[in-house]
Each structure stands twice: as C-alpha cells, then as structure tokens.
Amino acid sequence: MNLRTIANRYPGIVSFGKIVGILFLVAVLASFFVLERYSVARVAMDVDSLEKEVSRIRQNKEYLQSKVSRLESLETISSIAGLDLGLHTPSPEQIQWIDPAGTVSTAERSIASRVVSRIEYLCAVLPGPLLGLSSASAEEATGGDK
Image (cartoon, rainbow, N blue to C red; front, side, top):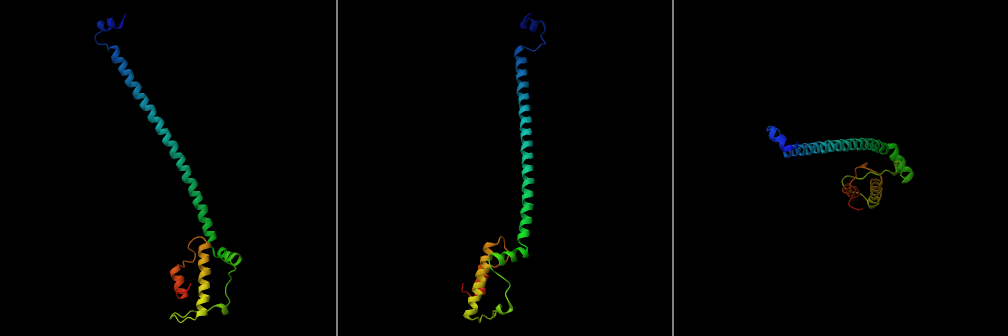
C-alpha cells in the first residue's frame, strides 16, 4: 500500500508533506528550547562567577580598610616621623609663635618655611589626607616665602 492509496481511502489523513512540515517545525522549536536552556545555564554560571568576584573584592576592601586604619593611627605616624624622617616632638624652647598681625621676622619666616616644607613632605610620603595642609595654607603660614 502506498501513501496515495491511503490518502484516497482515508481522506481525513494528513498528507506526507504536511507531516514533514510539522516535524520540521517541532524540530526548530525544540532546538530553540535547547538553545534557550543553554543560554540560561551560561548566564547562571556568569552570575555565580561575578558573585564570587564581588565576594573576593569585598574581602579585599575590608583588608585594605583595616590596613589604612592601622597606618593612620598616631602610633604609626609617630613611628614613621621619628624613625624614617627624624622628626621628634619639639622642646618648649624650639616653639615660636607667629604674630597673626603679620609682623614676623625673617628668621622666624625661615623656620616656618622649613616646618611647612617638612609637613608638605610628610603629606607627600604618607598615604591619605592625614594633615590636611594645602599649598595655599602653607604659603599663608610662611608669609608668602617658600
């Protein structure tokens, strides 16, 4: 029995071309479904990878914040200033007050200029805004002489 005889005997049966078309459509839909599942699985793997990276970055951030807080402590700054830079707490005889009216002698300006240059050096060497002294305030402190 061939297909035409079956189609002639049973007129309600679908033709061979229609069956092939339906099977092709089902195959295309199945392949789209498989590709969609694959892309969802790949995105899930990417999300997992990014979550691990975020966790690693957060841990690194916490470590760096603790290191910064440790380095910003007064004990660490005093140690660096004393051992590396040779700076120590001045004696009362070494402290000189600058008159706010601007009547400062040349010798006093020279001393102030050296102090400001050491402070600027400290700001350049030590990490972060520890002292908050800008170059404008440094010029103001020395009376414009640098």
